[in-house]
Amino acid sequence: MKINSEKSKEIIISFAQDGNFRSTIPNVKIDGRDIAQVCHAKLLGVTISQDLTWNKHVDNIVKKAGKRLYMLYQLKRAGITQKDLVSVYVSVVRPVLEYACPVWHTNLPQYLSDNIEVIKKGTKMYFSWIGLRGNT
Image (cartoon, rainbow, N blue to C red; front, side):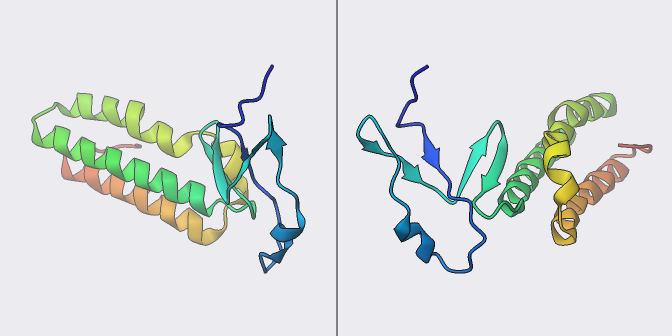
């Protein structure tokens, strides 16, 4: 298997307070090309940061879920039935919140858990507005 240097990225994992350590690490090269150093990268849908925190990943899923909740609101305005709205929620919104959850959720600090709770509360509030009850 040949590594594609254009698609490859380098993340230097470090917990150092200053960024001076980067100057001492030589650039990685593949086929004579320098590999781009990044602070975070997406791998199989999970955003990994250089400090191994989940801030960027949680921000991404909260934004994505929020956009999909807005789509649900637009579908409601278009007159879609409640049953179909629930089907859309279960197939479009919930997977965003649950994808790779065993990987990142166990190490989530409280302030990031609160961000996800905002989306969950928004979902419950939305379903109460359209007259649906029950566990979502």
